[in-house]
Amino acid sequence: MEDIDVALKQAMMIEGALGAALVDVNSGMALGAMGGGSDFDLGVAAAGNTDVVRAKLRVMEMLNLSGRIEDILTTLTSQYHLIRPLTSNSGQGLFLYLVLDRNRANLALARRQLNQVEAGLDL
Image 1 (cartoon, rainbow, N blue to C red):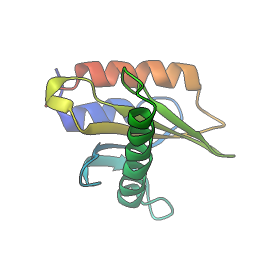
Image 2 (image 1 turned 180 degrees about the horizontal axis):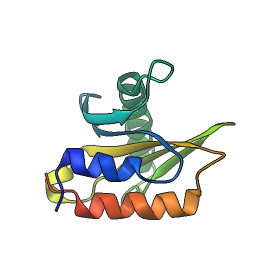
Image 3 (image 1 turned 90 degrees about the vertical axis):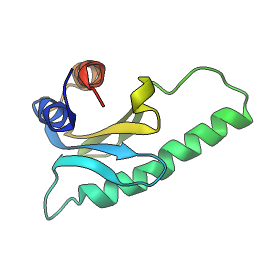
């Protein structure tokens, strides 16, 4: 089981990773973040993506959909933004957020690797 910093380092080792964060969906605050930079503020992106998760959860509730969100993908012309809500009891209300360079990343492999990062995360 890894802590937050170790998990984020593993996420940043995914081919094409530009930034990674562990985010609290209730507050929008990043509990930890790596990568990003002056041209990409992970704190702003983390806060903004909480709205995406909340909206999806509201729609699922309105439609009476059971189950959970495995991941949410936003595809931009140059990037992939991958959101993966945590499934462990200790991770309820948190999600991993990964930004990938679309030209360097293999999306299927990145999804699989982010799943493995989540599985090893101990909060």
